[in-house]
Length: 448
Image 1 (tube, rainbow, N blue to C red):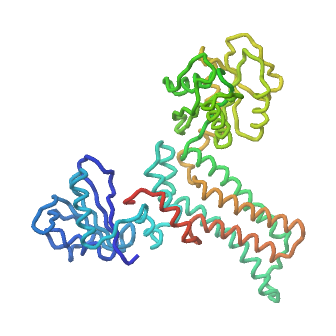
Image 2: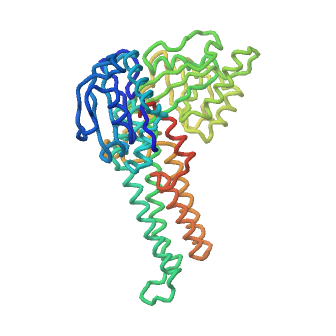
Image 3: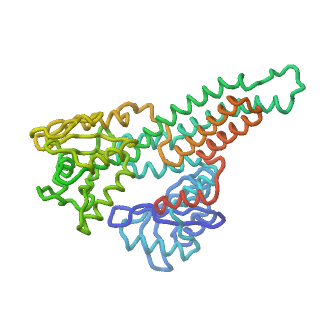
């Protein structure tokens, strides 16, 4: 990080202003070469009016913010140039700064430097991008809680609690001759470990709820042709998104739409009707529908009340056994020909007559605990990487409890507890690999 990076931090296009940001040891010097005033002795956190020039040519009229390390986002010298919005002037200023010695920043490199310089931890770094991309008020609140360090403190407290248990074990292992130290046995630490596991389980559950709030819920609507999938999508979206006809196989590809339910994004996907077909295009659509079943967070399986269940539908029911699902029986305004005795839980609806659609929404709320998380109760992890590491830590705790049940030596139990402690450390970036950091920050936008 000896070089100085530069990038445009605002969206390219016509606008009132554009902001070009530099960070690094030469940031002030590089800008000073092109500015009409001397910035070398400018106090930190000050703004300066003037012009950017290339030789004798004036490029733009600007305001320049000077922020000296270490009280900056990256803990390096940072300069931000507020120039007129628009592609031509912004690019011209950027081109001049590159010519003066700056290097074009990689995606997320400013935030990466903030992490590597100890300004923020890994959770806070991820929350920076989450806040930028948040689409609902609930996801904004989760991101801001993480960004302000509240979620990191939760993980640090867990690690502190675990290290206390580990320390007590190590004292017994390393200094068995000390008479004033209580002799620890597996049974004596079991209750502490079980209590920790219970606390971790609650955090995992609430974190999974938070993930749904932040990323939205992917909902696949599946069923055979003409059961009303496209009509259901249109009704939930309250717009004519999908084409609806009485011709089987009308929907040959996925059709998507989004609604907000109690502050949570529902990403609805209407799929091609699942059936045996010789039509090449429709066959591709059916294959995509089957893939949606695997990737969706929730499947709405639609059946026709006016027709008998087919063998294909019975196979789909089996495929959905371990899947979070809603079985909806459509067309209840027509004569009943469907044997519902093999269905465990189902909702009766009529999309045409607008019957029962609110029951589907209520069931989605119940399945994903929508409404259970309060605005002041959102200090939880909300991305797949972090939740995976939480589960990894819990697995290590479970293994420690299993070793105690087998009456294994206490130092074996300690190894499992240390694995859990390290997994929690990976969440906030106490331990990391260069490959992880490079991959994570590559997802960021340029200039952030």
